[in-house]
Image (cartoon, rainbow, N blue to C red; front, side, top):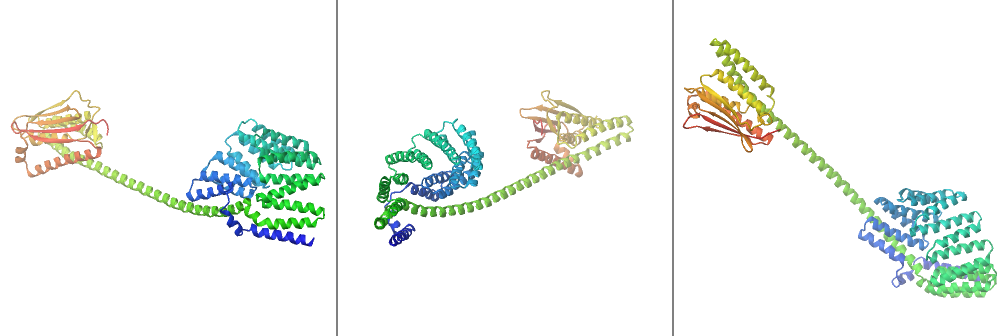
Length: 607
């Protein structure tokens, strides 16, 4: 028996060396057909290199996690499922996030990570888009929290089953099967074997065409029979499962099922049948390249022959196993896939780190760009404010200039008016002086009321001009008569006119043309309605521009020049400020003598 133990030690030393990644794996990688694990992990590697979007990556992480679950690598499955959950959270995809969180919770529950599972079931409930999904996840939270209270667990599971049965989705069918299995597990904790078997049978009724899942449940029922010392029923159930497994040609399950059935047969004192099954599983494992399964079957055979004290047979089994071990490992796709996946997993981790660093750099760059854009926007707004403020100042200055130019007209008018009053008093014309002062004060009051306005209603302007002409006629009654002709089609109350722009032209016509005329002259102020503007004409038959200039003093010439310049500046400022087109022309009448001034004012209702 000393040789027996030495040989067993030698086997495990050799296997450990081979499993650690020797050249045997490297030589066989190229010749192996790609497994699902390899395909799905390589797909993630490719997607990371190509920079696929987050939702594509999340879906591929979930696919790999599902494959890892099938390979019983729950720790790695949890890792990749967590990555999928993180990406769904990042993209706020609630429906997919809820499903991904539930899957993650199931993986954690299978590893007895109860608290983590509770948290994720709870999050799945919060993100669920359908009421039934919320109820299902909430019941799983309650089930796990009441681990030591089977009655409460049963209530939670039954509530979940009731909610799921209201749905017709195939996915809900899978959830119902899981719920019945959970209920059976609770029954087992309560030592209620009959109820457990009933719930497993309920689960079987819900399965549609999933023979693998059916076999798993039947094995659970067989275990209940075995634990209840109902070996005959347990063996019958296992034999039924073995037939199904053989029909599916699932090598791994064929081996495991023979091993499990052999254990029951040994307990039932059917050693010969058991030995044949163990030998079959061992040969199948050697033939199909299942190293771990071959080791397990070998240990079963050794244990059997130890009970028979057959050391020679034991040594023979060791020698055969050692001879075939190297070729067995070379052909073991499971071990090769595991080694390949480990390497691909490392590449994936490296690519994820690179992607994370790249995203961090992009984030910093974007932050800088956002800051720069904000700074430019602030600068642009500041420039706009400055421009607007500058424009406002210019506009204000123009308005001040307009007011200043208007006020330049008033002192001259006031001086001439007071001079006329003085003249009436000197001539003892008290009545004329009183009448003049009354009219003058009325005109001045009206002018002062509108002195701050650039535009006033045309009717107000006509009233001012009428009063002004009356005053001047009172002073120079022997020199001229006047006529004010306003087109009846003009709505003078609705149309706006520039304030104090017409009066200087009337003043020029009287003071520089009509008052020097030897016979009595005529001044006509006409306001006509044109297509797109109002035409104001000031027509006098005075001495004319040339003769007037010849008899004026130097001061009078300067004053007239300043007055005309004042009018031009006011018109320019009005046009700039209010975007209008006001213009005037002066025409010297050659034959009859006198002057015509024409003003064109566009129709304005508001400014």
